Image (tube, rainbow, N blue to C red):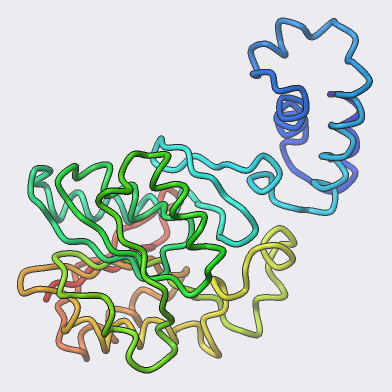
Length: 279
């Protein structure tokens, strides 16, 4: 663990000892508690080699979630691969906003997730609303496979329908079978020119399709706003995550489309992160 932490520190990685413990747990197939209990034992050669391989990946700044193959979101485990964005705590603000807007947990809501990725938004909402049914639109077959696996693992696959489609192409609304009580999305919102300047874990490893929001970062929101009145039932909601400093522009796009934005929700860092609009 010490040697691993030294290597991670040299690569400029924060929380190196914490990450070293995670890598050693992954290599040894032991829990962190078991590692602590056996901390004075000599590590078997196979585990030493395995942790070196994992450390070499992390030193190249591959996200930890891809290395261990999982990330927790809203207290639930989600499989992740390089085909999907790593679920982030900021995105849990979407769940908080929805639960406050739609407090009835026993309604058979119809939910749509635009750009389902790992499924962290849609599947978490289906977990919170046990009678709801959900549709997830996804352009990447590899990402859709991850979402399907997560739906099965969380026991909501019987209430989940995943649809191949891309909002950049004409007619993408036709196969969704709307309207819906709730439409959620964490669309790509990074300006195209800024993607390569993101931290290496993101720029080098996460799928560009899920990052690149066009020249001004708002291309997806224009499509979502245009489709919103058709996709959302009367009295329903459209809830999206946005980048720092974007929520006022997103709200303006929704207003121009005839939707009624609510005051934005802030994430744990105090950044205005989520825009919700009623139809």
